[in-house]
Length: 258
Image 1 (cartoon, helix red, strand yellow):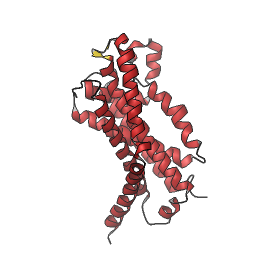
Image 2: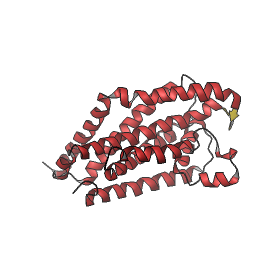
Image 3: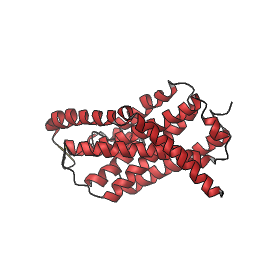
Image 4: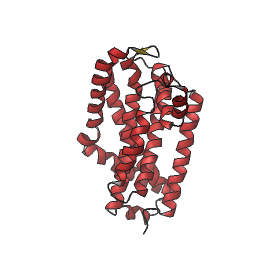
């Protein structure tokens, strides 16, 4: 068989395995984000949102819709890859890939596409739930879908790197708890940074999640605190850097080869 055909079969095998893995336990991987988002809408949207009023010309519940959708995409994409790849290490399944003639970029692509698929499934489900609480007219379908996928790719890569360095089950929960969650909650999901004092506005600009949330919000609502060109540049830069770093770690066998 030609190398291209072998690579295609290898990619399909890894990808299908990843999709089947999270779909078999859909009560743990797909349903919880939907339930959590519904609670956010009830508490922050209906109960607290009525007291807050409008933000950037939209009702508060409409304003937080893009952030809540993207937050579910981020956590789902990240957790899918970090858990799957770590368990491959823990169960010593990864050795089968390492001794095979499968290129590292095929291995990486298979895991990343699996994470993106879970992010898309959860994101679509959460979007459907959001329509039960808010009347949303998407400003730009192309921009919304682009940011949706790019964000999922970025955090799938981040989850892959976390899994490579993880040496225990605790290690795969430290980054989501102490890094990912704070960045997400402080990334403009629930507020506009224009409400913050100048110092905190400038400090918020160091948070990469802010650019993704605002670009996604512009795609849905047409409003953003961040320049779209800058947002795209930062997202693509992070993807390139993390992808290159992930391939380098695989090539050197960091956290895999003993």
